[in-house]
Image 1 (cartoon, helix red, strand yellow):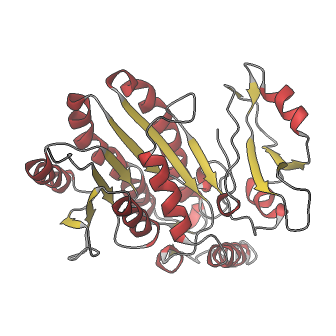
Image 2: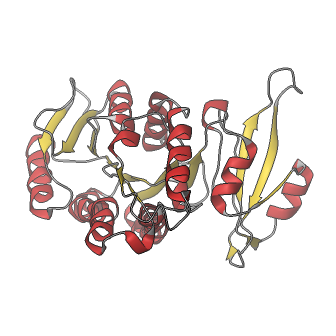
Length: 328
């Protein structure tokens, strides 16, 4: 008897991280359905035209997939875009559109797929967030807000659907070299009022993006998370920050707004995170630099200055150097 192939559905899989993730899922033996507004998809995938801002197109797409496959094993919500500019000079309709695509587009897609996964008693949903959702970026306020919403939504949804055998997680990429940078909708209005800070901030951010991680590495990691048989983490709600190892140490601190960067020892980490309560924190783990001590070591702990929230403990796991780390 021929084994049934697993089915993966991905939104926005015709370019950038989405395309690389879709290709990685193909290599893992999945039948991949790619949903986007483009007329044609990439080779090897089954393309369906759909718009994440129009629920009726998503409903039609899912019904078409079920006619062909009768099951959906993995959903990867990747579709999204970015805008930049000062809050006071950003039109409300532009801000609404940012959240409508990035956040509510994911919500609409999940609404269509969740009943399918619930009936089949299994499934995995991977929501693509961003490091900006955890470390908000100035002059990308609405983009950061849309990704922060994905983070909270993911953790809540994971607990809702866990009894049905459905796992939900989100991956937070850092700087990745894709066409996302060129496609960003930039609003320079008010730059004179802000003393040129808007232009400088956006230019620096885009420079970092173009020097960031290759999309193939990010896609391979996302596919690994989506395909993993038994999740390595204790909880289904996982958030993973992919930060390029070539980033200067102070860059993320600047983005976070004067965060406190401190070198710490593994012993301290065990003591700090072995308790049931812990302050909000992000761990950046990297391989030892060339010529340094053998093995892996913990390099930095980033603690947001204004944080007073209490979070549950996390399980620490080292990642390859190309996708140095995090988990909430």
